[in-house]
Image 1 (cartoon, protein in one colour):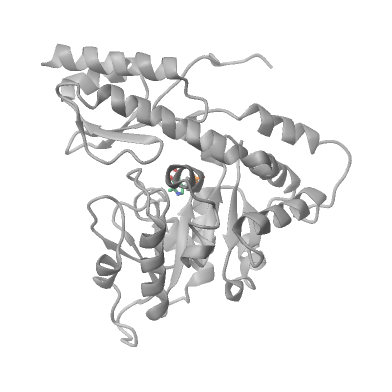
Image 2 (cartoon, rainbow, N blue to C red):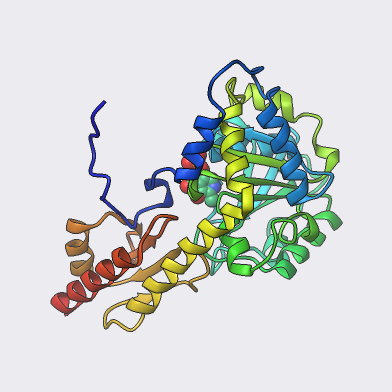
Length: 351
Ligand SMILES: Cc1ncc(COP(=O)(O)O)c(C=O)c1O
């Protein structure tokens, strides 16, 4: 097969736009050849289970899946009864970007709460955490947070702990969507254990796709009380890969020598470089603290239009004109500098 794209193309749209880190690709090749038992009974998945225990704690149980939406839907099904509801930020991925998968596939009710920076607090959760025992209201039994949030912000360990305590005092589980958990751990200079198990999280999805792997996420059950249904839920949610060894091998490579942290730190550093380069440009208004691999900004519509001719990036909020610029594990300093120069030129032209 001939390449159909230019391998030097780059974008600031999403970390999903990037390819596969060479060490991950090599791991897939290493796991290739010969026959191995299917559906997760292979030696790579066995090894991954051990590695996940090392990272998240002895009780942790790993369930590799195909994608983030599937991980969220499956986790929510495990956490909620049929009459259950999950409380989340109104910017949450499960509320805005997963179609009706949580509602239709998991069959749950979402209670969304407005936030300033994408982050919930016990006070914000309390706005929807009520009505237990009222047969007319869906029963809030879980809280969903994402780390990082959809707005690129990160919860501190103390903030997660406060939410976890609130949840547990009110009979709710805490689920963390960790599609970008690595970026948060890198920003906080914390271990995966610190920001999940030690902070009271009950279940987390450990993201890989956005951090250099080809495809796959890993649900990690931290509270053993929740583990029983997971294998069945993975099957009925069509997240059970028969050739699971190749998802597991990618995660093994990602965890080896903390490659996940190296890649996420680089991605974060590239976003910081972009932030530093554009924050004082006249016309650019940064809208969120830069805490991971994303920069959110509002700039003149004319400048956005010009930039879109040259670069892929997301219009985040069409009514406010907010855009999202996202870096990836393979973003280079030169690419950031070229983009920042283009932003400067486009804003000058628009002034
Ligand atoms: C926070 C978060 N959760 C979940 C997902 C869903 O992942 P997928 O596209 O693999 O279903 C994404 C993807 O952008 C995400 O940003």
